Image (cartoon, rainbow, N blue to C red; front, side, top):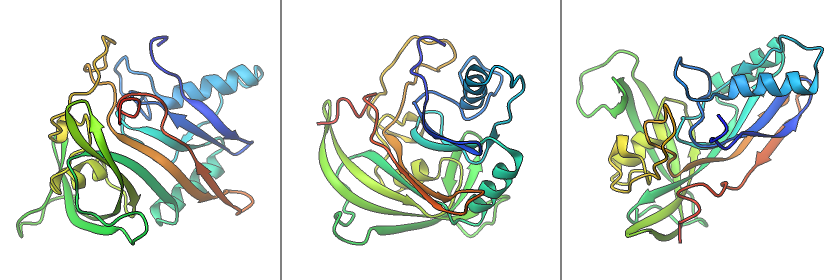
Length: 245
């Protein structure tokens, strides 16, 4: 695991741990050789509290393996239940930076973002948009709001930086909805990006290192005090953020 950039805790108390997840990390183990944040967090607690042999860490939400950014983990079952309920009830605010191909005609940062609302469903490895009237199992009405921040280039390709407010929650939702709008996330080959992600010879990585999706802010109520907690972070200097010009 030494070849992988490590997560870092930016806030921690007896109930929660807020971390920065690097690209390439799973939320939880899947039987592969890829590292995951749950095991990392448990090990961090053991190192700081040698008397705690079996620390509790609860996964309250997920972040795609190829994405990076802020996550909140619960350190008690009570905290896990209360924070998970906030995610289910959609009272948590999550904002992302998305680096996409081309120049989407979304409103600028001083205007209200454009609402993208579609019905999504899973089809194997992919999330897809329902384009006909046929209902499918486990489909969900999903929404994001997008604002255009600035344009530039990643190598030979035109790219645009977007602010994306996640209004619902569905696997690969942002990746699917932006691709369906004609602007896949940079490096996201699964959803049609023409820009190759940086390749590293790491076992179990599928030679994919990361994509242009970063969870930049996270707001939730502390599970014990009820106080609103606001966390923000800048993209770490991993690809493609370190080459966007």
